[in-house]
Amino acid sequence: MKTIGALVFPEFELLDMYGPLEMFGLLRDDVEIRMVAETREPVRSSPGPKTVVDDLISDSDDYDILIVPGGRGSRREVENNAVLDWLRAAASKAKLVTSVCTGSATLAKASLLNGRRATTNKAAYEWVRAQGPDALWQPQARWVEDGYIRRIGRHRHGPCCHIAALWRGESRSYCSQRRIRMAP
Image (spheres, rainbow, N blue to C red):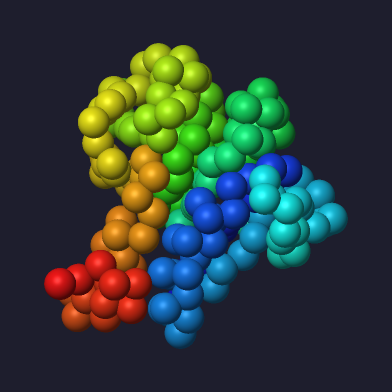
């Protein structure tokens, strides 16, 4: 069983987190999804609904996959040393690190994108790029892979289906894509 550590913070973008988690949820027999935050209190998303926290960043748990969403709260998190330190430590043990939208700013600020191809939401491109000038930014890309790190600009489901295929094979990925109406 693989463990996913999904970082949540105040004003994270709900779809950035729960869109990918819906895809990974299709593999519920193979993955355990853990919501990770600084405190145990439920974390309010940008649109308002709150997420219950399973693990604290201070717990030092290991995750096979890390997911970092974007959202208005990203602008605060790039200055949050506790989160940046946790990301560096957790990423060093993870098999895969992913971000969605402006979540790439948080990875960039933690220096995890230095020398790696990266992308982000085009509406926030210049701000995100400023968080990690040593990343190899791909302004036209919707999503990129570079080793164990993957970034998703705004196209959330397709790349997550691809990642799910790493565990279950192409036929399972095809089923996931058909469920969200991406296949012909």
